[in-house]
Length: 140
Length: 140
Length: 140
Image (cartoon, rainbow over all chains, first blue to last red; front, side, top):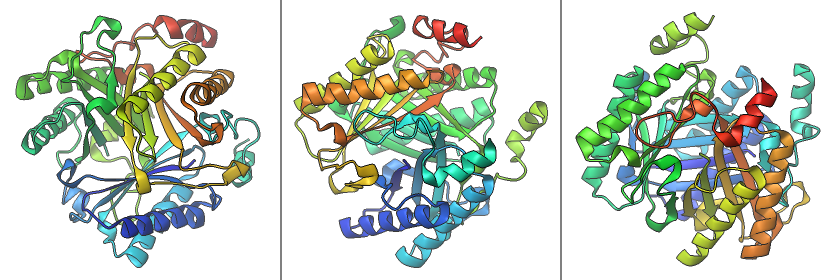
């Protein structure tokens, strides 16, 4: 965790899709402080099956839209979430040529013990992992 | 937000899939009061890869099943959720010919600040949007 | 509910995909006590579009990876979640030949009233269902 779903409307090359995923992951590492190795991503391409509003909230979106859903351990502050959104949009704009208006992101927060990274074990059920420890301490 | 995933078992035409998504969106607008422009939907068709129980809870389901997952800002009341479920099932039955038994819906609630509609900003992190303001006031 | 998404990297036969889903469901029934009939699953195959870290937390993963996302009613204890993770990994290893290192699982918990199993009704909005009743009593 995080587990990231990246949904595209337009058909892009496998290399481009991979590059987009690279950028999204870098934003999570740099914007949220997750470990570089904590990378699990699923990309989907939907064409006409991805429907979006082109003007909601005054933001002009195009078919270049990307919808990013991130399942992650709960507990980040509002400021951390804002920083993450900015890191993703800035990164996709600078490195992948996205319009920032076309970057839609949603976070789904789950309890630390809700994740098994393999071996049938809830690796973070006991002590929080290092990158969440300061957060847990601050909340205690 | 809401971000809506619509999963079908049977292959339907692009026009029919779009019409189904139209009806689901209308149910969200009329049943839950979300803005008409707040529309972000992803449709998937799964064939044998969508598995369902044909009798659970005494509801007789068929291959015409649709599974609708809705990620939305938390805070709706149980009554509002009930009204939404009814609006979706009634709408899909009346407008798209679905059997109400075949309409499965799940809601995933997230904090208001968990959504970025574009531009790298958490648009609803500060004040709640108009359609959630009365709810926030009632809970304060 | 639960609603289960099973995401594979490698292309497997329809029969094998179905068998994997069977095993995952059995783990939910035996490991968590959900009713046998409470089965709703969606399988996806992603190839290069499923990206994973091969070493995170010292767990050696391969392209045989499976990512299982489970949306379920909230309220299970940490011990129940641990038992579920173990049941899934053990089952997929014993019955389907998976390496336990390749079994990634995430749980998304939602309120009981967030699910409609059909007919436009929130079936569990009132009294909890039998398999959740003891849990609800313990928490009351």
